Length: 139
Image (tube, rainbow, N blue to C red; front, side):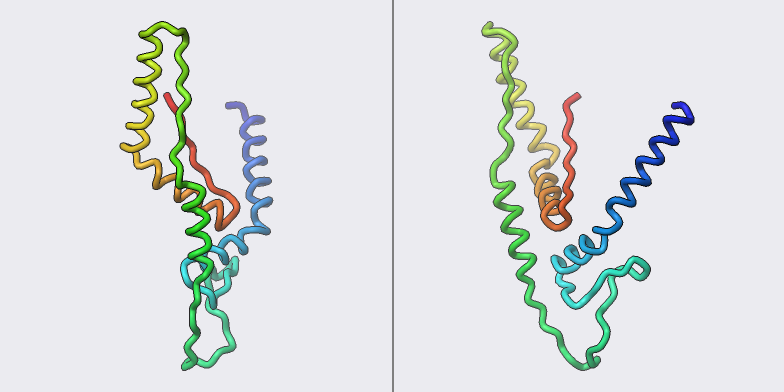
């Protein structure tokens, strides 16, 4: 790779990091609320930090509706498995059988690699932070 292309790539990575910086505190706060830390704030320097200004003896109740709502949305979005559309090249019986076998192979790989759980994690991340990634490819 040439130096010019590498510099351009490094510049694009820096621009991407700077673009997500203003949202990072909100994402971390959302994740903290989801995990039950309602009385905490996220700071860039210290990370997750408890809020100050309450007596040490005072008990703070946690009513975590955020978790229930996020889990409900994630389960609604992932309740159906993906449907594969494998089309035969021709209407020949061998091609139709190969397409059927490919569809069954995709179902097997989906189950074997535990992709449903990975999809649920990606969807939950997208609900909490607005970004969730699942990269699936067929080689």
